[in-house]
Each structure stands twice: as structure tokens, then as C-alpha cells.
Amino acid sequence: MVVETVVVALWAMGPAYIPNNAAVLAGGGAPIDGGRTMGDRRLLGDGKTWRGTGVGIVAGVAVAYLLNLVAPTVEAVGYGVPTFTPVVAFALAAGAMLGDILASFVKRRTGRERGTAFPLLDQLDFVVVSLGLVALLAPGWFTSVFTLPRLLVVLVATPLLHLLTNAGAYALGLKAEPW
Image (tube, rainbow, N blue to C red; front, side, top):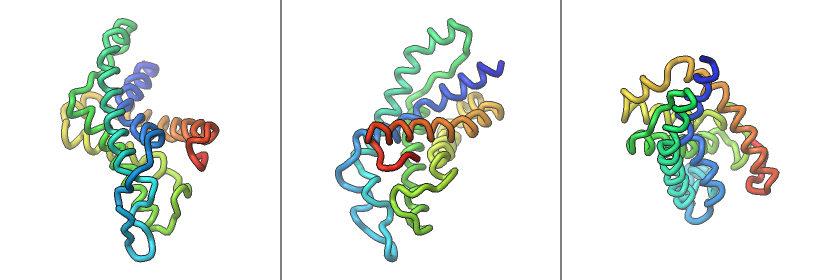
């Protein structure tokens, strides 16, 4: 039962876990804020681009599609994993990107520069917004998939996964900082 809870929780978050990583790989281009400032600080900074955001959302939706394709195999092993409707796939992926963008805005407003660590916000921004967007756009799917034990798994596992993937991206030279 515990293993299935973990598997389903991480599976259900798959389309939200991928977008920010894809955005790092495909980033560059025009910044979303167009260089605008609020006071003496950029709204978001050069790290939040239209291309990265678009690629991130497409990557998250693609992951949902791929997970739907392999779901019967995983279910044959004995785990009842959810499938993703187009609305759910989009909400998870777009919510992840929007959460990262909002976190960037908060970081700028609190005086933090690009790449500066902001514990918990850095690890859970995309989770909170993607889950909120799914709850808003697909409430039945959200309540059937994200039970309290699964939400707890997501809240505990995500910061650990986030730190590991960012450390890997840093080691590969894809990120300027390891967090």
C-alpha cells in the first residue's frame, strides 16, 4: 500500500515535474517581462523566457501522453495509476511553469537575485500552482487522485527530487547553481 501510494503520487505529478527541466534545456530567447522593472528590480529576469515556458508546457503535456500510453503496462504490474485528460495534462504542465514564474516574481520583490536560493519556495512553487490549477480545472480528477497520503508524498518527495535534479543539471553545466 505504501509503495503504491508513492508510485501513484509521483506518477500523477510527472507532467508537472518535467516542464521546468525542459525549460532549462530550451531556454533563451525573449524574456517574458521584456526587460521591464518594478522599482529598481526586474519583474522576472532573463531566466524566464517565452521559449522556455512554451517548451516546458509542451514537454509536460507530452509526458502525460506518454504516461497514458504506458499506463496499461503499469496497471498489469498491479498499480492503479491515473491517466491524464488533455485538461489535466495542460493544467499540471502550465501550472508548473506559472508557479516558477510567480516564484521568480516573489524572489525579485524580496530582493533576491536570479539564482539565489529561496528554500521551500524553490522546491514547491510549481507543485502548489500546478495542483491548484488542476483542482480548479478538473476537481473530480484532483480529488480522486490526490488523496491526503499522496499529497504528503508529493510534499516530502518533491524537495528531495528537486535538489537531486538541480544538482545533476549543475554537474552537467546546465545550471549556474546547484539548487
